Image (cartoon, rainbow, N blue to C red; front, side, top):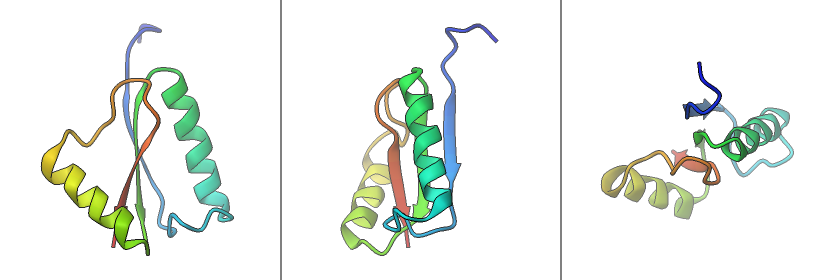
Length: 80
């Protein structure tokens, strides 16, 4: 694969996204940030207890392309 190829990546974690101390979530965020920094389109899919995050995720799915632009910060798709 050429070095300039852009990947679309979805990271999925079974742990509530607001739990910042959760090791898996920290790892997912770190890898997602690095992939985005390298120019890839990164989506994080995670459960959430935050109703605002869930509403924003639903609006994104309904109204937009779910994946962010190449190199943009990872987008979190929060689910209930």
